[in-house]
Structure formats: C-alpha cells, structure tokens
Length: 331
Image 1: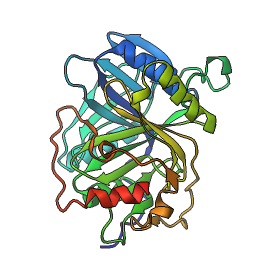
Image 2 (image 1 turned 30 degrees about the vertical axis):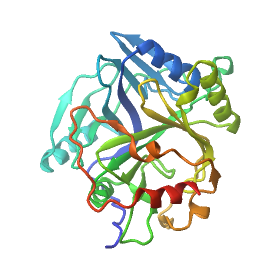
Image 3 (image 1 turned 120 degrees about the vertical axis):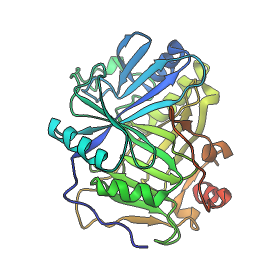
C-alpha cells in the first residue's frame, strides 16, 4: 500500500496544535506541577478551572485543567484554524463525514467547534483566543523546564491507516514514519506548522492520548525540570529520559503529572517546509539509528495512556509484538 500524498487544497485550513483539555483531581497539586516543574504560566483560575500557557505563547491558553471527582480523563485536544470561515468549512466537512459535530461556548475562546473525528478522537477547533503578553523575555519569571509552547500530541489508534488517510486529507504532511517497509507502518508523524509534527499516531488500543509535548530551548532546562520535580515530591513522575529521540532528534524527558497524564519536554526541531522533503522512514529493526541513547523505558510507557472522556477504546487487530517496538526505542 502506497503512502498518501500531500493534499495542497484541504477542505479547511488547520494551522497548528492549539490546546489540550484535561481533568484533574487536585487543582492545587496540578498547578504546582505544571507551573513549577514544566514551567508554564498561569493565565487564569476560575470555577475550578485553570488556564495555562507557555512563556512564548501569546494566546490565552494551551492547557486547560478542570477539577473533577473520580477518574480523570482528557476531554478534548485542540487545533487552531486560520479564519472564522474555516470553522464553517470544518463544520460542513465533518458533518458530511458523518461525524458528531456541534458548536459550543468555551470560555476565553472565540467561536468553537467540537467534533468526534473518524477515529473517535474528540477534537476542538477555534480560530481566535484573547491575546496575553508573551513572557519569553521575563526571565525572572521563568520556572522549571521553561516550557515555550505546546508542540504536538501522540495518540494511540487501532487503525493507523485510517487515521493517516483522514489527517492527510485535512492537509497534514507526513514527515516521518516507523516501519520495516511502507506496507507495515507502526507510527506516523504529521505536521501543519512547518516542523516534524503536530500530531503523531502509533498503533495501539485506542483512541487514547499517549502524551502531549511542550518545547523548551536549553538542554539544561530538561535537567532543571527533573531537579524541581524531585524537590517538590514529583520525582517518581519522571518516567523516561533524559534521552535523545531518533525520529525528530530531540533531547527529551517524559513526566507523569499528579493524575498520571503524560507530558513531554523536549528541546529542538528541524523545519519541514518544502515539497521536495520526502517522508523519512525509521526502521524498527535498526535500534542504533532509531533510538541513539538513553535509559530503557518502562513497559508502562508503551501500554499506558490517558482515556478520552466518553470515548470507546477498540483493540488493535494484528498488534505488533510490543517487545519488538521496545527494542526499536530502547536498545
């Protein structure tokens, strides 16, 4: 099966990963973690909801935390579209696809569209947010990992080809993929904003949110975040890293927040802006290339992920041996 081609005339214009909405049990503990360890800026706290953004971000929020009782899940992942007209086009497109689509009122966002995509992922689209002062040069306010901006999501899906085709139809570019050949693809990296990825799909029982990632600048920020995590009692939540990715090449650390949601800090990207840039295939049978160095991940890194609120999880047919994938990432 050949890989899908880039759609240069998508039905509407998605520009980037925008925001993620999570449920938490203890808003104070979550605030401490995301403000002091990850290094986000608190924009507002109201009605048991906390809004945060990276120090580089001018829009009101990229992370929304809502306190609930009981099990905590992810309610939505957000994408930005360029114009209000794109929202209307998105409504028509997803409606035609037979997806559940509705207009919703969301605090601190312009007109907002919620839908469940064809893979069962709850998406939220908006074109505008209130603008806040960037904190990138307010160095005295920088904390922990000094998270700059929300960069991407990684999501486990049972039908990888279905998700790949659907998002390529929406104008996403395939930049990298994991597989021994083009017939047996295990993961795909898709982008809209000109770097390697806005959304990553891995084969797995799902849909489930594996992690969301914030970018930082200095390598030292990754170590500082780990030190602050240890000092504040979050040390056991340092789940994986520091290490270096093969795909993307970034240095990284993965954390689990107080509710078990997984968040990544990483420090670099390269540009993917030109049509002659072909997708890069990473061979899972070549671990020395795919995962250059770092301590092995725990088994839970491959198997555990955050459930979506009201989402039904489907098992992956013909799921690859997880130890094969683990070797690709670890050894």
